Length: 378
Image 1 (cartoon, one colour):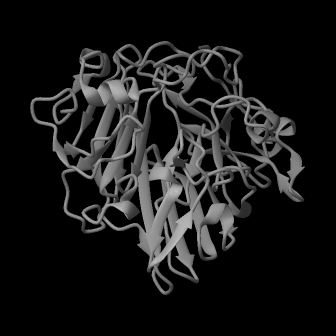
Image 2: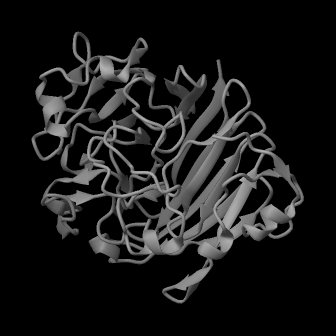
Image 3: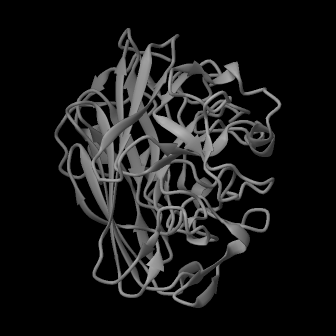
């Protein structure tokens, strides 16, 4: 990609951030007018954030990250997340639905779309091979969020998910903030409250390629995760309830490994997900502290991304279900194993497994989730 040059603050303002006065890298930034519309009677826009080194664009339709520009070791900029060039492709779900989105109310899967809470059985949409995935048909990614505050480097969004939305009980009040910190971190924070018992497990679903969108395979990226177990799944990718040690398996990333090194091993869990698509249980105390738990490194560009969280698990997905049918925002195919998702979370289908950390949220309690992606080079 060409080197990004600096333009005047007008570029940021045109991208939806009224009042911004900082300089903003602008090569190939998405055009605000391609996102300015009304969905379900609510205004949609595109917002450009920068900390002076990295630049991110966000739309309040689904609270999605549309682009994220970071430098390589030589200072050349690339957009390292997958996305689309206009709002129509997100609204009409042309291609992969979850690009750059927060997902929930319950991220990942709920087996058979059913769960029991306080003796009452609930059914939610079976939108993925007979199971519920990432909140159902609407989730929190296919609705317009209210913009509460925008600054040069941060945006706070709010959503009231009504009682009965996608079958989930309780009015769920969610506040989400994206911040680009001076330390070149992209920080995601969630707070949520409910007026009735419900289940909550939010996550962030950007797809990363540290070479740049459509930059080629991610099987040459190097990954490390501080996780000593996985939650193995059946063929439908629903956890069995077991906690399987990673020792001696292709799932041991406690030391750095090239992603492609073992992805072709004939292991049931790799066959089920057509590659890596599992929940790793983190080596940590469940004390609510934010700690570094993963590092992704791409040798050609030198880009590194650390992941930190206060959650107990992380889903690592190696882009196995992309097939090049759809193109990204620069007109290039989104191809097989050309992106990585690292989604901090609690365990999938936790409500149906008593031995998993609880995802129940009761009135008077506050759900909190912090996920931090930190960018640097070596």
